[in-house]
Length: 384
Image (cartoon, rainbow, N blue to C red; front, side):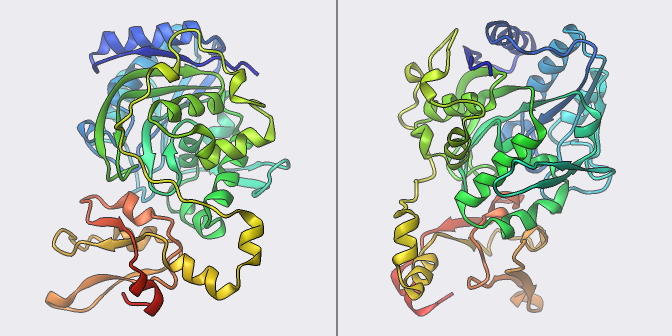
């Protein structure tokens, strides 16, 4: 497996500047072989939002990627993503990604129209995935992530971006089946094993810090990354924003399998190195300390349950909430519902059922949901 990650500077979303940076990075990290092929480009959307919010891959970045892949002889270019609550005939209008796709002569794909079962016999957590049929139609899949923090997985990048190949709300049951960070990470790695992505181009010009991937703050980073090795790219990008790369659950699980890399030391950097680009004040999701599997096993069940109740939880700012119901629809554990009438109408959360997947926080269009620490008293006495 090619282990090169090309990192180059790109300070603005001016079209020619982005294209030049992408071309330089791709030339430095060989492996983007698309001549005569059907290519599926998978940007990151989360939910359709204007580019300035830095939630989705920027439309200028997608434009440059399409241009580059066309020039390299692709026969057909498909583009698509499926947000957590995909509406019928979704075209990514607010993000500008749908318009760019059409203008550049590529094809926007509705991931919910047709599905394909993709086997993963080598999977640790999942042996088969029901994905958009575009995965089967394409000769190669290219991930176009935005560099962001992630409330559950700490960091989201090239490998995690492929979770959007699972159409719409079909993603929610995955959080219920794999509620821990470790089990969810194993599923994401299995997904990458099944899909076998060909290449990744990362939009790290303006990323997201703080409570990402949908409610954080835009942060200028000024970089573009390219690599045929998605794990290598994620190790590099997480190091840039200040995470110890092996503390990211997806990267740790992927590295343990020895498919893409056996050690971070195998990564080659033909242009810039991540250790020279670290951002010391990047606002990150605090890492949760783990006592290991043996400690988990030895702890009495009541103590394990009490510790689970201390896990930061979603709480709703009712002065902002507009009762759109998106959080109740995305909630895979059915812990959220709208109750009451008139002024008393509100979203309520059953914290005994809530699995702390933070999908509600991720999907809220008005940032009315915050992830807050739980006080000892609340955890001990079960106060809401």
